[in-house]
Length: 379
Image (tube, rainbow, N blue to C red):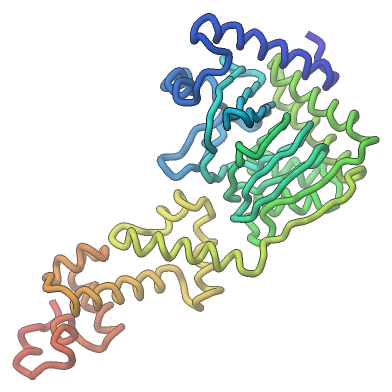
């Protein structure tokens, strides 16, 4: 099938959607099954065949299974019934077409392990990025760093959108060698190196460049659809060509830098998570939860508190131990368990370094009598 023209791509996808509607009418009694029913149909192996990524645990981090994916999505609002109808087509999947209807926003805030680009083919795309509501119009593009928290606001989206995802680590050397100097190159290379200042990039295409830009997408679509020999390498070349074209022709470029307060907001989220998981938390756990490289947490705490993450964690654990000693009758071993200490000598050393007292002395309100000190010697 020759699919090198975006108009032909859209005609083909619409035909597939109509066939899926007919199939749903026959099997489900309606063209757009309810969201909950669609989730049942996609449980287990069917979901693996449909989606090119998987969710990590319950942290809403999407992990891309391959180096690249492309997805065409459409939202149609039904104001009278307060619902929206949704379809999606992912070329190259065993179950490429998905349709459902829903009456509320279903997309939770999430992160990726891949860079994502969203292009508004038509309509209006509304999303929340790192707590900021952003509205994109026709011909707008948005590049999102891996690890950037965001969610679509489905009840305010209307139109057709194209998503392109690629893992920065798989492309880093290729970017450095082939991307033109400019804002897009700097953005993509900083994603791989986990620089903290830029989270997303907003661009707009002039009307005169739309057809050429969309035909680059058509070429990627065709490669993913056919999956002929070396199709992934061909896609990489088409992505480079498109990004260089965008660097030369994009207008109304707006680079959205992470505001000065944004690291503080992330720091507060991390501190809240630490307080709730004081007995188990470590940097590896934070990496899985917030999806930043391990050294970033030390840099963040050093920047805001002037100390390493481990030092901050020790201070927070000892602060909690002090509260429990004064406000409860819990034994010292139970307090240790609740704040994540397994070694009694280590806990006593940390506590005395922080307070100048043993736990028993602190509970009594100050350095006790000499006889009391003898009963509370360091283990």
